Length: 516
Image (cartoon, rainbow, N blue to C red; front, side):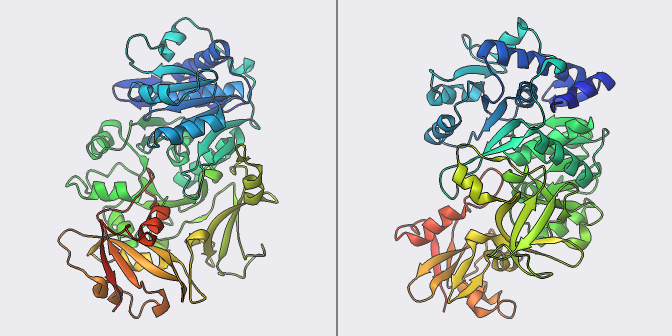
């Protein structure tokens, strides 16, 4: 069976239970099952979508993005959710690489959709209320039929999702995930969260990112719970949703948590309904973890990537307080290894590259056989992350392998510097990168966002590291800027920072300090 069976089965067992809440709309499992079948019919009969064909979606989070995922699963087709934050040329390149038969877009992104599609290959359809004259999914559903589960062509080995990476290291790559990857991921998430049919998940992260789609959103539908979907993150809307819907689980990246903590509604009473908050995607300061724990809510970290669907390791609520800063143990249906540059397992608690294996791992990169061969070795996905596992099996991530700085022949992982600096109340954000240097190979540069009213200088910053890190790990240069460049999941875009520190005119909007 394909994964749309999740919804059909719940539609049979609990047809009147709310599956998705979106604004004023409440969609039951019975209604969701019917809409998936009808949408599969539209894809098949209006656009000729068959097994292996691609269907694209461009817009903010919307229930029909979920509907399209399961409708594609029924047909053996593939959904490609598009990053709405990209510019037109970037989106056009993704469309050219993936060549979808149809592009669905919400009203706000219809103009962009018209700009980026190739009319010879792709047709454009609106989602939700759209301007007059634009054909919409609702129009097509009004006069269509249905593809029942028994009539579908999809199965667990069919690719169902293509998520394009951010392209930080070059051209974005389309990560291909099979239906069985989403199934394995749902099982991992269920164990991670102790998730069940009574849970109500709030999703504010973008569904075009595998974290927004798969850390909790698809798993809660697998479990028969309720998904409360917001178009995008908003502090007021998030606080309002907690009591209104009885939210029990949510995923928030550190930047979102910080925004919530700056509001006077952040307190034990307001958050009392939450069983836990999941986080990850970037450096999670231990001070932030402790501050969340002070209001009585476990903050659990998940480690993974687009290529792992994404859940690869995680903490549980029971482990969260005692293992601050850890990415947790290997997921229930997943394996990890730590290896050296030759691919050999390192000794216990040794540092090396993190490898992941399991049904949750990607099938490969779309149209990129060499990149696929480089990333998948004997069934193991090479993450490119460096980490170590303690005696109890908890993973700690040092940094990205490509972010490692080699200065004077010594290896420095930026995260170990960042972890100390971010604890300082004068520092709001920090990222450490390497800069080419004729003498040392690379020197260390800290790019810092100061807290409001802070007067911290270079010497004050470096003093924070004295006695805690070897001197060769200390920054030789500091740039003070207004904000770090981040993607929609909160990850710092270090490629942009490397460009900032390397170009002669790159510091024109920054205040610079040098080691004394």
